Amino acid sequence: RIITDYLYILEKADFVHLAREMGISLAEVKSRIDVLKNLNPSPGRKYSRERTDYVVPDIIVRKEEGELDVIINDEGLPRLRISAFYKKLLTEAAKEKSEALPFLKDRMKKAFWFLRSLDQRNRTIDKVARYIVDKQKDFIEKGIEYIKPLTLMELAEEIGVHESTVGRVVSNKYMLTPRGTFPLKYFFHKSLAGDYGEEISSLRVKERIRKLVEREDRENPLSDIEIETILAKENFRIARRTVAKYRKQLDIEPSHIRKRKYWMEESS
Image (cartoon, rainbow, N blue to C red; front, side, top):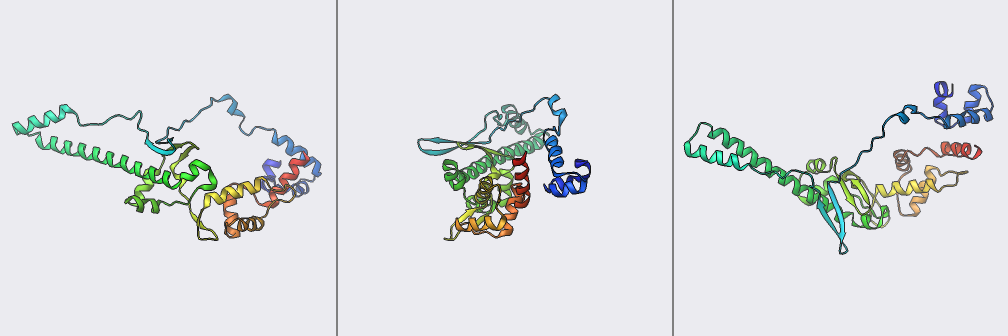
């Protein structure tokens, strides 16, 4: 019945309310929840074959002689070129003034256009990757506390392309760095202003919120206002509603729900 009738109460961890609604003691609620914790929500999974999805990075960043080097990973991709056979065919058609000449010229023109577009794409990927690595060098070498804000528009203006072009380049592409493998989109996030005019990455603020909650007093979890106050002392000037928004994006529940869950964990 807890799952079928009172899930909306359970998800709030309001166990006193749950006991009252079910007409049972708090101890009985705790006992039943302990049983639920040991149940497998996906029992059929143990009979299925495990599938591991491997990410092949499009860009590889290596540290060579103290400097970060960017390599476009084209291993496994075919080397495209215009077929010598069709070049010869076009030459012969031109000499003989064949009726097929316009058709062959059109196809050859489209082939050259495709190769030029492919080359332009690769050069754009290289520019995007190198700008990201240059911008996020401190993050790659030192960690999340050093990540900087970056937008598609900023990068587009720097390399001289349209913002939508950068958006297409970073979509579904991954970068292998000495710190791990990241989707290119990971490096793009909003900027917040610090007390001294410097720009602070929203990702950095989220990571700080996560760590604060991770280390909080389980008997007195931090409220959004308390987190806002701590962040302000650390030069992260953000509003309480922004703290709440970031907390939700991190899948962290409000302090009153965390407190109930901590209590249940301690008493189990």
